[in-house]
Image (cartoon, rainbow, N blue to C red; front, side, top):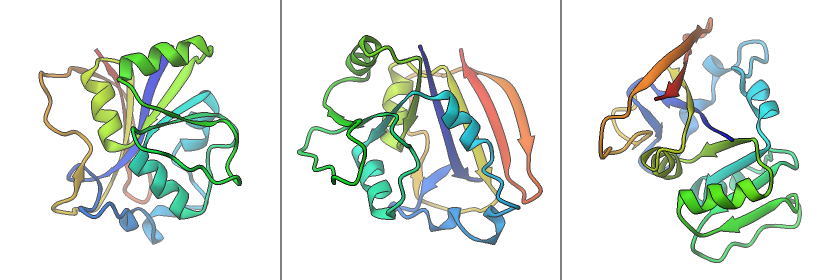
Length: 177
């Protein structure tokens, strides 16, 4: 089973403003002739999505559902109301990253996409992520929610590929060693 991250950050490493806003991800610099920066190809390779509750609530508030009917798990210890307009493949899970991976493996998952800052950090600390793709947006926020919080030990990565875009985006893919 492969576990991956695919995420955008500001040049200074933030995934959102301090209040969780990602308004800086949209605008004229993000639209270059419908380019999706590899997201659809990545999503086509994924069969299961794991997302933290705060990120899930942000997605619900956006009003758009990008994930089709893929298996989708929201990590939360609180009650979760999923509106009927969303696919029935969404479920709640409360447990450690290791427990979740064990659970997902019983469902036959082959490629899991991890999304949400704290969720990514927790899975990385647990040593469960194999691949990280980060698209750097050419903007400095100065402060916000960092993609990587404090780490308990060094995490070594192997650079796989770098792709640049005409709008200044730089996308790096790494394997976690």
